[in-house]
Amino acid sequence: MSGRLCIVMACTDMQEADLVGRRLLELNSACLVTYRRAEDLMYNIPTGRVALFILATADTPAVMGRTLKWLRHRWHRSPITVVGDVGGGEQEIAARQGGAYYLTRPVSPQQWDGILAHALGDARSKQGTSRERLTKDSRTVPRNGA
Image (cartoon, helix red, strand yellow):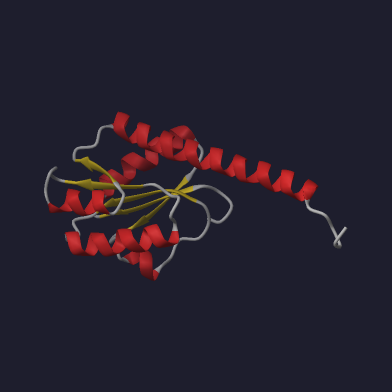
C-alpha cells in the first residue's frame, strides 16, 4: 500500500464499499482499503499515501469525534468524508467540527465521483508540488558549507 495512493474507508455496509471500489476501478488511480469500524484505524494504522478517509459507520458522535481528532493529527492534509443516515443531527455536527465533509445516505454515484476526483486530484497536485520544491531546493542548497 505504500507506493500507490489509497482511499481508506471504514464502513459497516459492504455495498457502500463495493460502490466506492467500482468507482475507483473506473478511475484506475488508487486502491481501496476497508475497515469495519472507524476505531480499527487506530489499531491497524494505514501506511502509505492516503488521498481520502471515508467514515461510513454508525459510530456514536463521541467515538467519531475521537477518531476525527486522531486522523487530523496523523494525516492533517488528507480530506475526510463522513457518511450518515440523516443530516442535521449530532453525527453531522461531530463530523463538521472535526473538519470532515458530511454526506447523507444514499450517496449517489455522481457524489462519490466528485469526492474521489477531488481527493485524488488534490493528492496528485500536492505530490507534484512537493517534488518540484524538492528539485528546486536540491539545486540551490550549498554542499559542504560552500
